[in-house]
Image (cartoon, protein in one colour):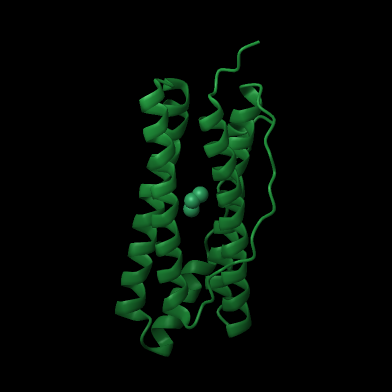
Length: 175
Ligand code: FEO
């Protein structure tokens, strides 16, 4: 039986699956830094973000399996970025999200070039998601500049980020 997904698309999606799991691992390390620093609301925000990243990975897993491709689970690298202060963690997250956006765009370009419109459609969720995540990071960087410079402002932001809860994704991920 001929597989629908080209070798190249399979490889790129497998790499993306690894990048999403790495993102979860990275954000968990950020959460650890904030928790240790005493900002449990920020830590909560990054724990929730880590769970979203795992959900992104699971979507790719499902897509590969639905197309008769067994995912290849490669080792996940240790987090490469170290948070240095409360604002820095947000900046590093933004930097990382831009990297992920570029990565998604690369797969999208490949799917268009190959005429693989199934994968192109699948990736549209990620294109929208990346835009949302970049905007969220930019908003948080603005928050830090405006309010994070005083203990009272930082306290208020910690309360705000502490209220973030994980979105339910189970309905979208049948496996
Ligand atoms: Fe799954 Fe934040 O990119």
